[in-house]
Structures are given as structure tokens and as C-alpha cells.
Amino acid sequence: MAFKILPVAKVYGYAGQYADHHDIKVYLGLRPNQKLPHDMQKQVTVPLLDGRETALYVVPSTPAPEGPRRWRNKSSAHRTFALCPDCLKAVPAGRTTQHKCK
Image 1 (cartoon, rainbow, N blue to C red):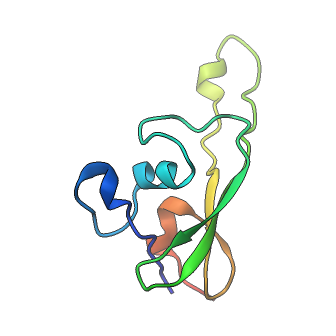
Image 2: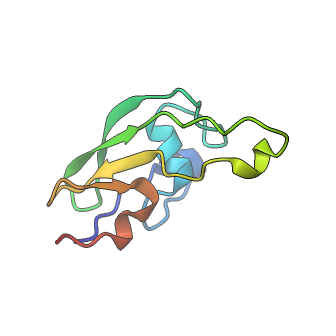
């Protein structure tokens, strides 16, 4: 079943339907426009729209391979995950509305 993380309304003065990438960064203690540090490892508890809570965590990034075309070889793997409160599966934080429990 899909789940939605509660947006942080105080940051923008209005709240969307559910948390976006700016809200996720605020929950992690960063500014909304700040990039995730490469070595960041953090876990926090975030509220959901239905009143429950879930864990949100960040994994460190993998370095891009060395070489002259390094910028083309950057990793685009997800780094921020939320645990599904129903099946406890790790779901990318931006994909929680697409999650289906099996």
C-alpha cells in the first residue's frame, strides 16, 4: 500500500499533498536547497499523512570512477529511503506513493 510522508509546511508557507525532495532535506537537518553530503549517514523518524511514523535514512554515495569523463559516469542510485510501515520494505523516499506491498 502506498504511503505519503507529511510535508513540512513551515518552510514554504504552504504544504503540498505530500513531502517532496525539499521537505526530505529539511527532515534530515539540511537546508531545502542544499545537496546531500557524499558521506552522509543518518536516520530520522518522520510523520506520515495517516498519523503513523516511519524511519527515513540516508546511505553514503559511491564515488564515480576516475578518468577524463568522470562527470558522465556519476551514480544516479537512490540514497534516501523510507521504510514501509506495513511491510517494512525500504522504498526510495521519492517513490513512496508508487509503492505496492506484496
